[in-house]
Length: 312
Length: 242
Image 1 (cartoon, rainbow over the protein chains, first blue to last red):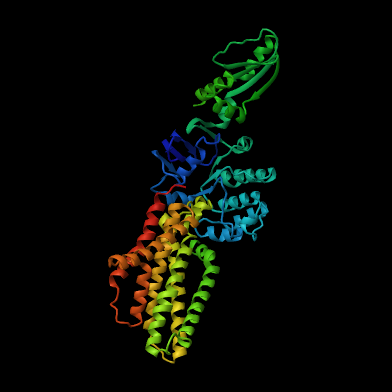
Image 2: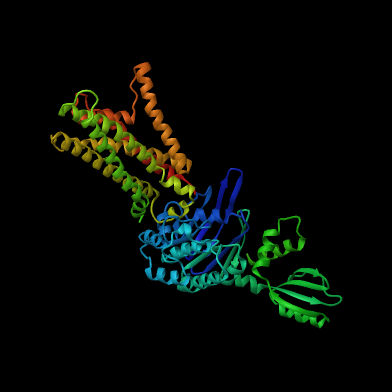
């Protein structure tokens, strides 16, 4: 548990008529970028609020950086930077004044970081926050979070309102300046491609429950799609072949572990192997969150179960 | 930090208040001395009527109103503006936000009433040629206390409503009832109910040296209420979810 930056056990949060978080157990290792993924209303923001002391859990417990949420909240907040989903700050203050306001709360505050990121993100430091564009507001929020010298950076939809150039800059900053220095990034986002670029670990949550928590590389290295065309190709599943799907004249096999050997075997049987491709985060995400929907084709549910049971 | 932000948010209004209220009181002192109803008052009468009407009436009423308005810009408004999730993740206990804001507001209110009382008595001394000792400055105490009650009331109600404007409406309504109910109770039932404006008025008269007894009970009551309101706000905030 000491190596875990965020640890939760059987975390439950209920609101009248809603079970927003339902027995969540998170294990976020130190010094990684952790992608916390889920649909709208899956319970991501509620979980983050519990971790930061903005909401109290109905049941269960959680620690952040080894400190208990609630009882040792100030110690957590001294070491944690947070970029909220709403990104609302004081409209009458300029970014320079917001820096002045925020600086005094953090012993590890860095004015060099303020100078660096305000230049990098091209933030107009003397214009009132209310007069800034949505993108610039997000940048100011990020500037304040990045300059705190925090051990843990919690970002709730950080890319919202940002153009692709700034998103790219931000991802680089997160990897080089935060994770690169052994600090932890906990990023909740719908932008799967962005998360996929930087995340070492992913946690997928739906209806308040954790569907999957694993190292992204492990998922990608364990599973491959093998796409092949030909006659009399095998259609049966096996311990290695978790799923067989047909798309037009192609057969798609979800293969666990040695996909190249499986592709070679198909070739020997006269098949034309079109592609051996890794499973993308988007496919994993869609498979997992759709598995309980009856209207979707059955195969995605099978993928989900295959991933869940194989990785966990 | 937060003290700076509280000051940054309120300074322009504060400057207006410390100009307007003393100026208003100077005007009423001037009218009271130079254009009195009936015969020109004696110096002693001028002192007591100015203290009773200008400080116990005009200044008390305006201090209450400004206290109410100041409380509306507290943490309740942060919930409405959705800045609470920024502020409340700064590494401070929640009581820090309550008592820091309260301290800044009480300091501002105190500065305003001290300046008002000093200006009022200074003008009176100038116009009557009679200089009092420092003692009349004690009239600032009930004024500041009343302002603190009004501030705490709106602050608390704004936190309950999570909206500064609604908190102001509730606070204004409660103070209005606190003004009317004691008057009605006294008139119809001959019962004395506590009223903050009544306390401020009576305390000012006592400072002016009229024969009334010092309202010790009211002072204790309103001091307790002035402290209980931010404490209630603290308890509420400590249990609040954003």
